[in-house]
Amino acid sequence: MNDANKMDKPRNPVPTIDIILSEHSNINKVLLIKRNKEPFKDYFSLPGGFINEGEKIEDAVRREAEEELLVKVEPVDILGVYSDPNRDPRGHIISITFIAKINSGELEAGDGVAELKWVEINNIKDIKLGFDHSRILSDYEVWQKNKGTYWSSK
Image 1 (cartoon, rainbow, N blue to C red):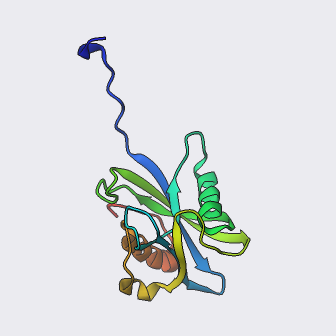
Image 2: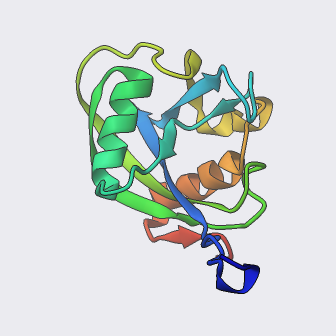
């Protein structure tokens, strides 16, 4: 096959999910994970990951929570969509960020997680965060008061 007949592989953004879990008795505390692999190894971030082909996005939320946190969660709302092409050093990766609640299980560090940490929203500035998660958590702080949906340019 000559070069003129070769099909270029599609170069589309890759979808992921991020999960915001608040402490049951204190919605001002959110759960962060300390990453044990690149990118942003040893940084804190929201739990989350890639959506598998053929998987519903809300099922990806449930699966990633089980893999990383060893708990079952239920998505309750979508905070927003974050699509800045520079938000992830691996390439153009879009995050749909969900707010979820823990249904069952005991939190433990699972796959890709070095540590779990509950953090007060107003102390986020003191934490070394990966990706654009400081922006996402800032939007979550506003969401707690006003609800609404957020995206990269809003």
